[in-house]
Image 1 (cartoon, rainbow, N blue to C red):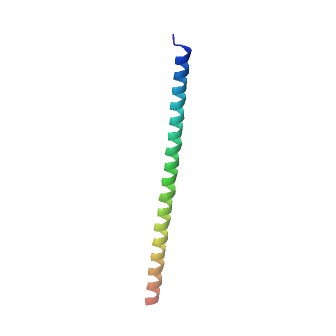
Image 2 (cartoon, rainbow, N blue to C red; image 1 turned 135 degrees about the horizontal axis):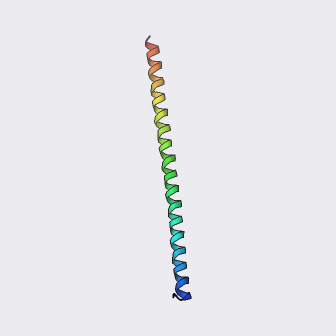
Image 3 (spheres, one colour; image 1 turned 90 degrees about the horizontal axis):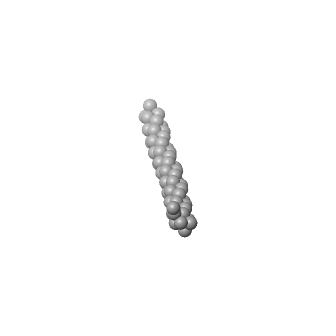
Length: 65
């Protein structure tokens, strides 16, 4: 049978492990969110650049008609 002290130590170790796991999960989720925001910003910038280039091309073609 385990002593009271051993049980407490195991409980503390499990608590630390659970806390570290929760912190890791939170950090991982935050990194994924940051990545998604960054990728969306890049996509938006790319789309804006493509739209501007397309508008310039259309205006240029109209001027030549």
